[in-house]
Length: 131
Ligand SMILES: [Zn+2]
Image: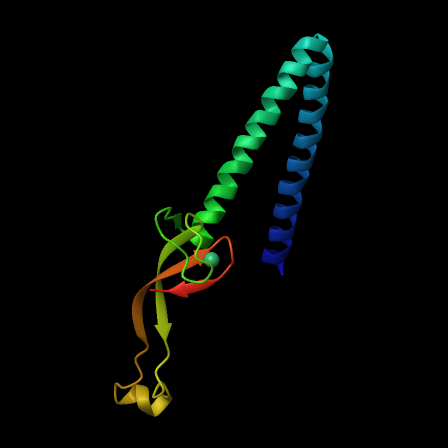
């Protein structure tokens, strides 16, 4: 019970400090922005927007790589026959063995087989296939 209280108080303090910090930061930042000339303010906002866009782009890039891997411009899609929209990603495909039951595992038959496959994806027709 004491541990639970301790954890709850800890979390409360942590979020409390975080929220108060964020409020203080926004006040200080607002004052700083207000003290700038309109040109400087516009410059500052443009700089921030650029930084945010760069960040968003990085996140989007990372998510794309996680989902589709890398683009392979030379590949022609076998489904829609359009070139330059295909991506590939090396992945492991786990095939569950039929004998993956408790008795099967006991006699060493129940191993899932892992195969390295390359997942292809076409951005044009949204088809997925493996090679
Ligand atoms: Zn296609």
